[in-house]
Image 1 (cartoon, rainbow, N blue to C red):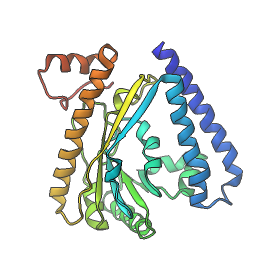
Image 2 (cartoon, helix red, strand yellow):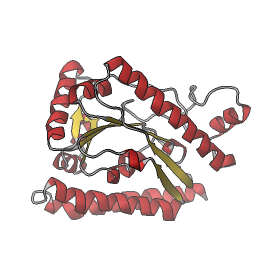
Image 3 (tube, rainbow, N blue to C red):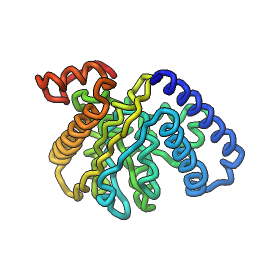
Length: 268
């Protein structure tokens, strides 16, 4: 039944996404960035989250909303799933994602991402790509936007060891604004590289913002410590909720209590 519900959701998701893209494509030259955000992106996200609840039975609980400050902000989120690339968007008034440049080349999707002024980065571009990303982020920050980055660069399986990249520390020191860490356990319910979706409650914890001004090594260490400690705690809560429906490797290890939840695991 879980697989069947997951398949139905997957079909519905791609169908709805295609319909939204086709409906707004003729309007793209005429819509402002904020107009596209209000009338297109947020409705698409709301529709997707509604289908996920109704078809699969997957809900979300957001903790620490009161920790989100006003104004320009650097957001550093744990990344386990495609889920957070949608679900985090409504939390912020005008976010800009740092995303890999290849996504901008996808027909139609790339056009919308460019219109929404997302920030592409060439992962193989070295220091030149880092400087270009920073210039774009600074320009958007000057307009009061929030910059959202996944410090590990790509999705990591739930429970996998952390792999934080230097780019987040470079942005933090260059932008001079608070950094908002976000922990989550979405990989338990919407695993990467899998059609499977599990019913239950995805937990998101918005941690207290880190003020600007820390040295790069210290912000890297603090971000990893704060996000990983909270994500491990949320992972334990998720495993307790899922019980026998949890990934077998994580469940067995949690039951044995023989190693911390952040040690290497197979992809879920």
